[in-house]
Length: 354
Image (cartoon, rainbow, N blue to C red):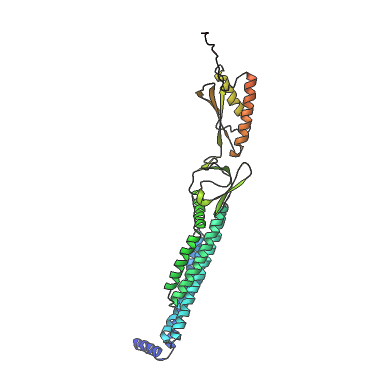
């Protein structure tokens, strides 16, 4: 009897116009509410037991879309059961599918915005280039989400996308050819950001001979300030393909070499002690590693030494060299140590009278 009554109920649902569709919508609404309760009462509590906050935010973002998706799926099935007349049999289901897409579209954009806001402080710590590249990718993701959503919406409405893709391909080729230098600089900036061959504040030397302090790293170019306070702007596409000497890496100390020549009759141990003492007494010279003097060669006119020492900041290279050479000259003069210079002896020989 129970099975008979149940079959009668289904027969009534099929015979009464719209009743089967209404029952389907009501069943899906109940399922949507059940999913809502399950997410709210169970999943959220389980996520709260973890130490990370990502799962909590993710559940909060998909909570509403899951409820509305189940509810709209019920409406979609109900519209199919109603067997509407054209054009409503096409318009109403497409509108319902578009609403489902719109719900998840908004949820995806919210998730991207939340992830970007959470990651922005980390990117900002890497400097201007990191911040600029991060914001650029954030905008690219937003534009990509909008374009994908629009294309998906057109696909739902059975719009032929082949001509659109063909036009977009031609336009993309034209833009790429017109902006090839800009794109090269952009990808060069990304390679600098990823590889980190230098950072702001480092002193670098390009293979063309320019030397200076890195004051700005942008998406398109990098700014280098020379010791003459001249700003050199170098496109990133060039920096990504040239040899760069970073005087500030891997450690910020910079070694300077000062060649010194003394006369052959000089006391070599005394010369070495004077050079090391002068370097050690200079405030700009690093105490670790300790300065050292090395005998390098027996020259034509002198015994050649080289003073090796380190300065803490590469920008002090010129000033420290000046001070050390000035002090060495005065100390050698005081100690009677001669700094010879190249000279030639000319001997005149008189010819015997014939």
